[in-house]
Length: 284
Image 1 (tube, one colour):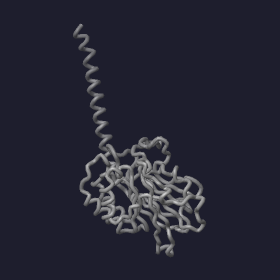
Image 2 (cartoon, one colour; image 1 turned 135 degrees about the horizontal axis):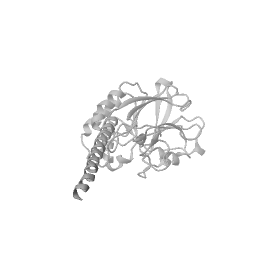
Image 3 (cartoon, one colour; image 1 turned 180 degrees about the vertical axis):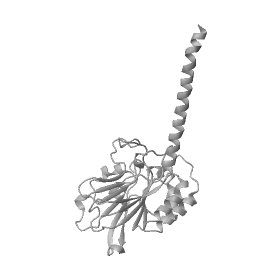
Image 4 (tube, one colour; image 1 turned 120 degrees about the horizontal axis):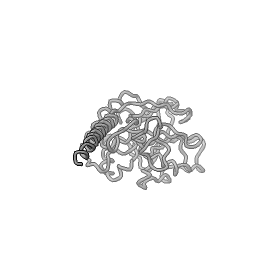
């Protein structure tokens, strides 16, 4: 009887070992690929929908967002950005990841300072920034970024005959820091000849509470493009419940456009079918 039992056990044992080894190899290969893709940064150029910003056709906006403590990607990020000639530079939050120890802030300052040397540079805060607010604010200030936390400013662009744009940065929605009433004009009070408005909002879902205010174009990050996207199905996995905007351009309401960047860094093991990017937008 024992010999008979041993006869049946041997193939099963071999099958189990084969299955375990196959799973281990596939798992290691998958995570290795996700790490490789997650650190393979590219410059991606986007053209906005027509009339996204009236009278500013040709405006170039460089967007960097969601660095998430990826210090190893800073040099690549800057090298790609320096290939462009932007009119504006925006950083959209999540400089660090809040469960990582803050270190090497000097390297972040150096990298971001090279970005701010390209064009006037503005920033808003992300959800991960809030627990490390003093460090993030110091890095941005020393890197010569203007941090807009529920604040607005105007910029005059010489290349467009000194035309003005209003730039607004709102606080992070998920952290309860988004207060548009402090910096935005209600639609009912908007003047017809007022300058176009660009909103910097880390979380694109802030659009739901900004609908009753005046703005033309909103730029966001936060989603990481979904970070892991199922091939063929074009389905992003890591999106907040109810989020329909993963990356790219989206029409919100008539004459309002939102751009969501998949960002530079990631949280977790890496990315899959959702590469990181430095985004360059050209307004049509």
